[in-house]
Length: 222
Ligand code: AP5
View 1: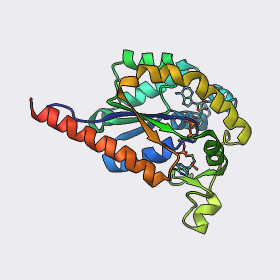
View 2: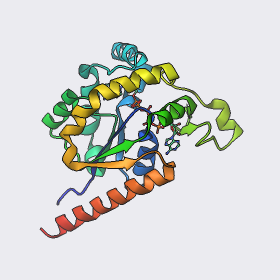
View 3: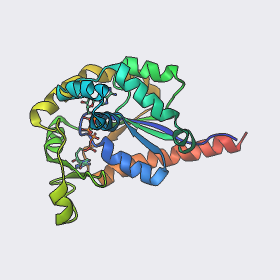
View 4: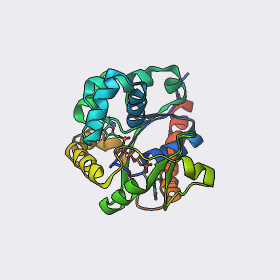
């Protein structure tokens, strides 16, 4: 049986809306959402040595070393659900060495979505972002405010979501992005990320719907 599960990578600057779109994509397409940043924050929460080391880099807006990140992502991709349902990789790879490692393990995406957002918009999105620790949902004080007072009262902010830190994160992004883009340029689809989250999703949805149809047609014809 041909495995029709989709493998998708999503890339974009800090706060370009990757996490927000991944929730919408995972809901509709059933893909397993694997976010490098979320895996790292979970590791920090365990209090492990790797978590402590990772946090030092994240606080500087720098890339966490490969020996921590690469295995973490690989282990998650190797779990059976990722293979069965397909995967949606968010925030990885962020460097040529990470991309090469992934290829070496045999993981290839069918499409590479690139969220393009202008820089002034990014800063505003970062400083207004809030997270619900209970549901994991991503909010924004202005663009996606919490639905109830109860949720509003429990929202938290990420330790690297200040204007100063986002500038460091943006620098790191600019230093690394070109080498990753070059590797996936044949399967890259650029998405205009400056519009509302519903309008961004509509663009992604149409890309993924036609990809699913193409893959069905291809497997049916064998
Ligand atoms: P990570 O957690 O991946 O952070 P990031 O790349 O900076 O991206 P964000 O999570 O900040 O933003 P997002 O694009 O998901 O945006 P969101 O949907 O939340 O990484 C953190 C750190 O971990 C890195 O700095 C690095 O140190 C380390 N790390 C991670 N991966 C690594 C790797 N592979 N290798 C080494 N180190 C690694 O949206 C942002 C806000 O905008 C929200 O408030 C949202 O509500 C709002 N919003 C979203 N879309 C819209 C819209 N269309 N209109 C209006 N508002 C919107």
